[in-house]
Image (cartoon, rainbow over all chains, first blue to last red; front, side, top):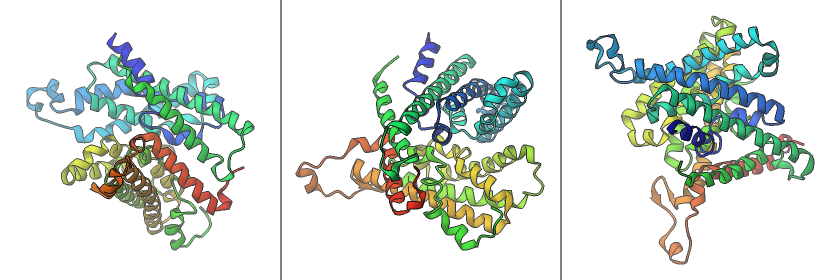
Length: 205
Length: 208
């Protein structure tokens, strides 16, 4: 139950895009049409679900203070937490590479639709941000980490698909002042949607 | 970037014509998150300038020895190493600011400005121009951060760098701080206004 709550909260209340503004670069660059936006969203969700539990295990059994006690009592006061950034990004980068190779081998059709986005994901801040939030909030179990990852990913997917749909309409139906066209109006749109999403903040689940 | 560009334009272009934030649209995440107050915005700007300049130099020095297919991992590791140094320095000397910036110092690693400049410039140029490019782009980024931070702190809390600047008689006559400016979505609106003004002045950047 606790995990289900966390999952739903991660989608709406703690939405990666509208509450934390993470993953904005690809969010703004790839939201020109719904189809590619959806593809990228799926890829991000997938990577969050994979990397969060791995980084959670790394964090609990290797990096945090006293985590190495399972090797022997003499390791009890080793604190490797200053390495966590490098370890997390290494996990993310290598998982991206691995997933890319796996998808290419086993599902060429998925690869051709996601292909170009997969390498981009290593530098999507939403992924690293997810791991850093996981570290900050001290999740109780791996399963919690998976739920949070899935929720954050779905929230990101929701956000990018919505904004892409709006931009598609805007391009044809509206008369925007010339200097604001393109990126300017997208900023304002995102801000308005962010304000709308803030209404979820009061909800306690 | 095959054509010959002078060092001066490498350094100065990112300030306006080729600004990383408002023209290339890179590194937006941190612009939104750290600019509620001016002080963290300045610290963040300086950290990014330092990391960007030095990672550009390092990547540029080893650019001929990096195998192409693992270059992203190599770049990330170099950047991550530098970011860890900055993070530890901030924790040691400016603990309060480092608490405010929380995960965003770590997120410098995935700041797209870094990857963008490393891929587009440092991989193809000598160390000295790369250093200038890093300084220029970092400063272009920092300027936007500072402008946004300035307006958000001034209008949102009536202070600058923690000192009250809106005089008391304004409040006595019914002036109220705009609490909305503190919230992250307003950073987007401020950036959009900067883009608006900037593109109004630079007609060639306008899109159809």
